[in-house]
Image (cartoon, rainbow, N blue to C red; front, side, top):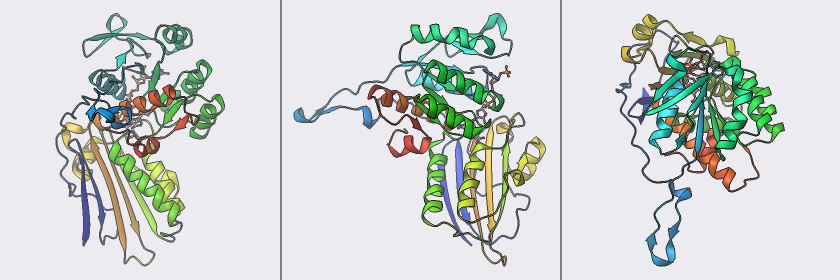
Length: 342
Ligand SMILES: NC(=O)C1=CN([C@@H]2O[C@H](COP(=O)(O)OP(=O)(O)OC[C@H]3O[C@@H](n4cnc5c(N)ncnc54)[C@H](OP(=O)(O)O)[C@@H]3O)[C@@H](O)[C@H]2O)C=CC1
Ligand SMILES: O=C(O)C1=N[C@H](C(=O)O)C[C@H](O)C1
């Protein structure tokens, strides 16, 4: 058995294993220990791309700290809250407004030490223009629900509001077309976690350079997420599309979704304390004669890996806007490639 293990993050572990296995059988608790979530180190200084060293004097200048307004839609959700907290930690200006149909006491939500006023989504078209006026350079981050993706994107486009779209699902083709046609600045990605983005990038490179390398192989995919997740993992879909380019025949509805907490603990090996927030993915490939198999896994507990990546994406987008970049639509591989992930 040949195996390679990559510890991706204190709150996460990723394993890529190559071994002889014959089926996607019930999981033993995973080979890679899923460590308890530990807070990520906060960025104290801006990243290299925004650091202006005074080379002539040989003394590095104090790096400018990026600070711009960010509106998180929706702060009532699990990801929205995590991103809002990460944005405050990173020194961004969290706009005290968000949208959701969820009732909150006095219509307000406390995030860090700030009060965020929650408006009904039906009011967003009326409210956002005045927020944009009050907060020039505003960037919106969208973590809502698959059903809201396209309508929200249309609204941001109509208003010319730059967006980091983390929400998965909806009509992805239409989403890209809407944003492209409106020519707004945007980062769209179903996956914001740096190490998972790197894995996805590696998959895309492999698919681009060795098309059909896995032709004839059988693919089995399992993904486990918190029971509240509404859609099939957008990340799994992106990885599967690479396998398809590698010659594997697979239909998206063949993905085995695990949403039952008991199965997650006993079969998948999800630590109980992460039932409310985890994303375990497993891809198993078997050769036509069954003699060779490959297994890829990326298993994330908690949400800090995505929240930090989302803040990186917002900072990346802000610098693109400030520099008047000609290219406007990006994904997280662009963000990673340009060294913009902490
Ligand atoms: N790109 C990435 O790296 C990641 C992406 N995700 C994706 O992010 C999305 C959100 O996930 P998560 O936070 O766990 O989900 P939650 O269900 O916890 O949060 C979604 C929130 O959106 C609100 N909402 C629904 N419709 C609207 C609307 N039209 N306008 C504003 N708010 C709305 C919901 O409120 P209400 O109760 O009123 O419906 C809810 O509070 C999912 O698509 C998920 O797959 C998650 C993790 C990482
Ligand atoms: O809903 C989630 O939790 C996640 N959603 C994203 C996806 O669908 O790919 C990313 C990650 O899997 C967590």
